Length: 87
Image 1 (cartoon, rainbow, N blue to C red):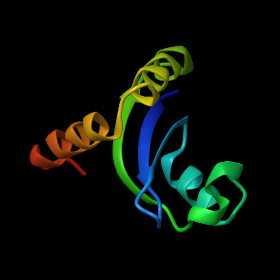
Image 2 (cartoon, helix red, strand yellow):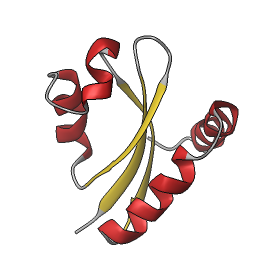
Image 3 (cartoon, rainbow, N blue to C red):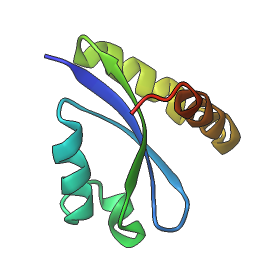
Image 4 (cartoon, helix red, strand yellow):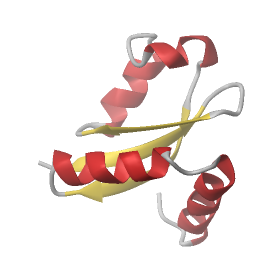
């Protein structure tokens, strides 16, 4: 099963990083106010970045790494990703 690390941009322009094994369902869950409690006042969210991993352990390790970054570094990652023309 594939796992994803993702970054969403919230309605207040803040960023949220998480992991999931179903990106579409997770974004829907966030926007339905059934996801992370910290996002409830910041909806809707928009997916701006994702990475794919072979297992949950790898994804969780990368999530912790990204969560430790400052906003500017996260935005640089998103920008590089988008420059490659990836979906």
